[in-house]
Image (cartoon, rainbow, N blue to C red):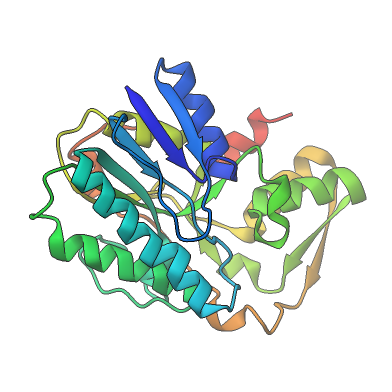
Length: 273
């Protein structure tokens, strides 16, 4: 298949583009430029990953323009040219809840989460009207190689691992045993995208393992592997209000269309050099 990946220079975009190439697809990339959209007419699929991904970014106008309005333009031009459309949503749309089903309540807490919520809502409202396939994926906590440019937005796997290697210690927020996330490796995210290319179904799907792990346990596993110590620090005030305490993907819907053998984060840690 001919596939255009937007946001192909980003963490997931790079991994996905490379993975799709190994699967025999013809892949090209595109990056956001001043409210423009690419011509999708020669592609079988557009996989739209391009977005402002920082959950702490506060320029609401810019986030809504790039994450919501540009996504709507992208989807509309794909509909006009008959090009199927996959896009990245986020588990942040669920907010502070313990129930993570695609048709459940959504309580976005940050401008980023709101931008994803608004586009999901638009897709759900019009999904029966589209003549192309439209598949949205609510990523849970994605981690893996290629996060070095994400800075403070990098996953705990990357932050903890680099701290252990560089400093011999890992900074962990106080109370981290109570904070659990559904960590999903980027390789599995890529496999979901690839498998769904051949599924004749539109919809929004959770992408996680369904098995949450606490930040503290992740830190301890990495500390054990690299012989590092753990240092507890307070949670910064600027992230407290939007800091999800728990995430766990309900995979019932995804399981009806594809089969996945998810890799857990502890297994991943111990398989990584």
